[in-house]
Length: 80
Image (cartoon, rainbow, N blue to C red; front, top):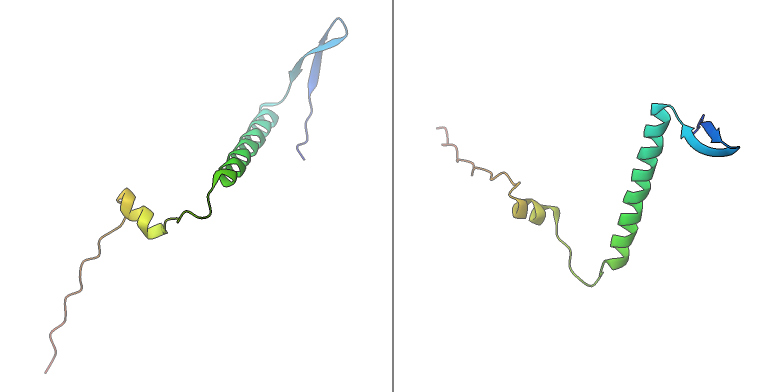
């Protein structure tokens, strides 16, 4: 749970503004971003069709050009 220390500015007895420390503001902002990411993940999983084949990590790397082509090893000459 986020520990907040808000200061409320009132006008005519009604809360109008809230002042938070910058650190508390950042903490709230990060929590909202995490919640948004979780919601996007859940929505993507709902749309996912399990009958469609997926991709292996190696296939994705090749598609993105991230694989390092290994040089073939040269055979060593046998010692006599």
